[in-house]
Length: 95
Image 1 (tube, rainbow, N blue to C red):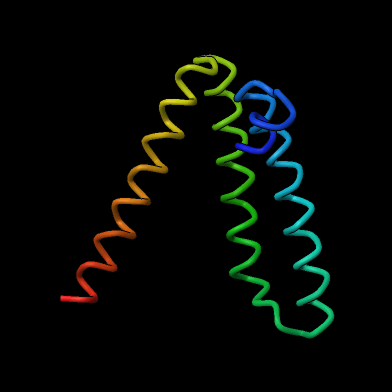
Image 2: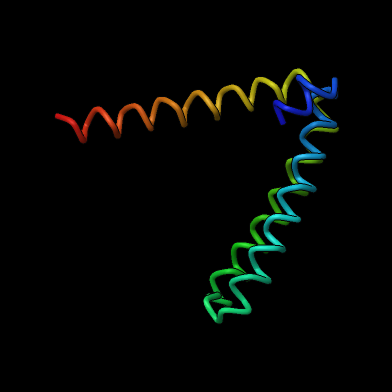
C-alpha cells in the first residue's frame, strides 16, 4: 500500500484496493504451488478463505462509509500495535 501511495500517487483507499488484488494473486499462486505438492490443509484453508472474504467485505463497507481519514487512522493503529507487540516479544526473549 505504501508503494502505491508513495510511488504512484494513489490515495489511501485506492492503494488498499490495489494491494488486495495483489494479495489475492499471491494467495492464488501459493495455493497452486502448494496444492501441486499436496501440502495444503484444505479445511483450514477453506475456513481462512471464508474469514478473509468476510473481513474484506466488512472492511470495504467500513472504508466507503467512513472514508480515507478514518481508514488511515485504523491502519496506523494496527501497524503501531503490531510493531509494539514485535518489540515486546523481542525484548521478552532477550530478558
